[in-house]
Image (cartoon, rainbow, N blue to C red; front, side):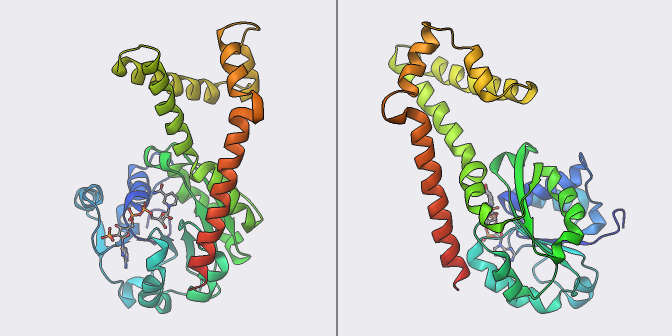
Length: 280
Ligand SMILES: NC(=O)c1ccc[n+]([C@@H]2O[C@H](COP(=O)([O-])OP(=O)(O)OC[C@H]3O[C@@H](n4cnc5c(N)ncnc54)[C@H](OP(=O)(O)O)[C@@H]3O)[C@@H](O)[C@H]2O)c1
């Protein structure tokens, strides 16, 4: 056991599969194949390749013998099948086995009610996790504090890891970073559409929009300036960017107000979805 732990991944779909690929790629402190057990009735094609290449143990049901070895369980299934998973797994887990849940909206108290008092970490990753460039925000119950280092190490393969103390912040987190990649993709779509509207060939407009967002993101990543400072640096008074900014930041609050409303809507939706999932 290279890392002195046994890890079970429950649900090897998009997000679980991305985590497994990261652990086995071992870029940032991964897992040895013999330390990882995968529970998924139908793993996706990419995970099937990982299973074959690394000789991973893949099961449809965890046995008692396997469960006694477990130190960490990563729950990466859809919230709708959480109860089914808890029924088949809950009684098998050793009392100190930690749970790391990436399920959107499922609260720590819901997990405690299904799996008992144990170290529990609730985490919200985002889509760039699939290329190791995501950001994951975590919160733990009291017992979970003892395994925060271990959880951080496991989640770091998906990108940056941040911790918060207050679980209520997971709603705003979901609205900003969980859903956030979609806002940026929409900007890329809108910029390409506007370029086409101004007469650029569609393909060139799409390329310019994509490269501009990639370049601006890379600059943001490499610079120690704030987004506001970088924006000001490309906005000469009276120039072309200024003319666009007058529209984007103009009457009625412009883009910042629209984004505020969008994030607020996502946060409210996250709370409603959480209420549905946790009331079951
Ligand atoms: N994708 C994201 O961007 C993202 C971001 C943040 C959080 N999350 C959270 O991550 C979780 C997984 O999302 P996802 O997009 O990775 O979903 P997904 O691709 O559907 O993956 C879920 C996997 O679990 C499998 N599964 C179904 N029943 C199972 C069972 N009883 N035991 C074990 N595995 C079972 C599914 O198999 P079948 O396909 O055959 O049903 C599938 O392979 C969700 O709770 C979501 O809220 C996702």
